[in-house]
Amino acid sequence: MLVKHFCRFLLLPVMLMLGGCEKLVLLNPDGYVALQQSGTMISTTLIMMLIIVPVLVAIAIIAWRYRASNKSAHYDSKWDHSPQLELVVWAVPLLIIIAVGAVSWTGTHQLDPYRPLDKIAANKPVPADMKPLEVDVVSLQWKWLFFYPDYGIATVNELAAPVDVPIHFKLTSDTMMDSFFVPTLAGQVYVMPGMQTILHGVINKPGEYKGFSANYSGAGFTDMRFAFHGMSHHDFSQWVEKVRASGRTLDRSAYNELKKPTRAEPIHYYAHFGPDLYKRILNRCVDPGQMCMDHTMASDTMHHGSMKPAPAHDAAMH
Image 1: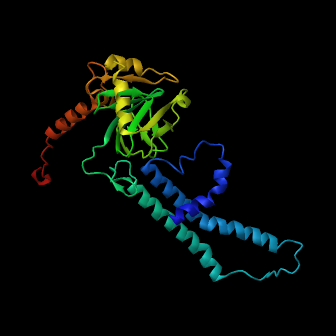
Image 2: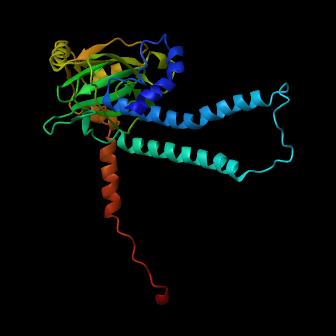
């Protein structure tokens, strides 16, 4: 804790320069996963500053001591080598690299987006009977589609979750490589057509936050943003009922209309969505008559597995 506060003190000049921003989300997020990522970022910055700051101070001291007007400064024209100085020059950067590598390696494995959460806060393990909130995400041009399979609802450009509940995201894209990023929730992850990415996160405070695409994807990239709401359990239940009250259904034909490129798409809700729609989007078989990728791969696997290799011929037989 002391190190963390000291790091933030060292970053004070940067914070002052960013004083016009609403909130330094990356340094002080409201989600436990993002908070751990912030701690890793601050720790590595502090470690690097352990060599950067002394070097900058040494430059200033040497420049002042050996200025042209200082005739009393001793200058040794025959000096050419110092084992002690060489040790400092090579050992200190090496130790810095080892320390930064250790912190980064540990953080990378602990914060693996595919790894389910074992805590929802620093001293708050995930209860054994708590089921994570399932959210399926699809990147479209230029908007975000969210499925809630446990509730049978879907939304466009609005995401909501109850506080202190783990969120299990499954993400894919319809046409292009993209990047999903909610700074206060967790790190950004890439999404691609025909592939699925996993992300785990949690929000610990009620509030309204911003999510967006962090990967350039064309003319509508700047409008590819969505609202993320951290809610109490009661408010989240009310929000689900509000979505269900829309009465709209997202079937295959509605999806094909929705996926057409648009800019600054307004928030809208779907009370129902077609069965296996997310799975069909992932496997590239939304339109009737299309064979799903998973079926194609399964068929290829069975076909190749049934093909027995030809028996080897002994050269001595010829």
